[in-house]
Image (cartoon, rainbow, N blue to C red; front, side, top):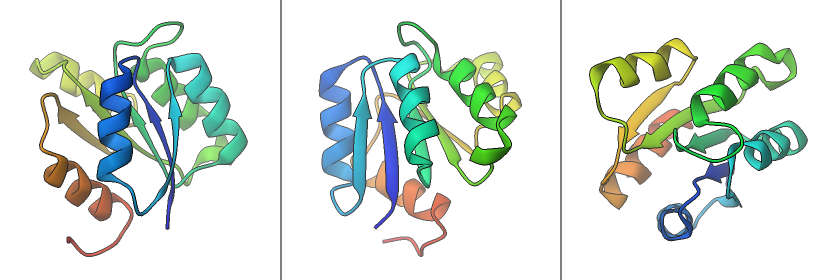
Length: 122
């Protein structure tokens, strides 16, 4: 079981992500500031970040995670409606390990999380 922080300002998306990853310890966050605080406190295996969130966007959270040596082991997935090539490139430039656009398939999310966590695909 992996520790995962799932940050999205939409409570329905957070709920879907938590259901998709029910075999893991998923901690939800409603905005970027809370997400970064949780990531720093919990040092999760994975952070799933929406890009457009209040208080701090997901790209800024990703940059902060990558700038903190104590969080070097945290994998980051961007899960967002931002689907333009420039936005995807910005996510990877910030240090994201993966980028999945909304709407998304719960099975694809689970499979990509499994890959990021180093487990075989379900």
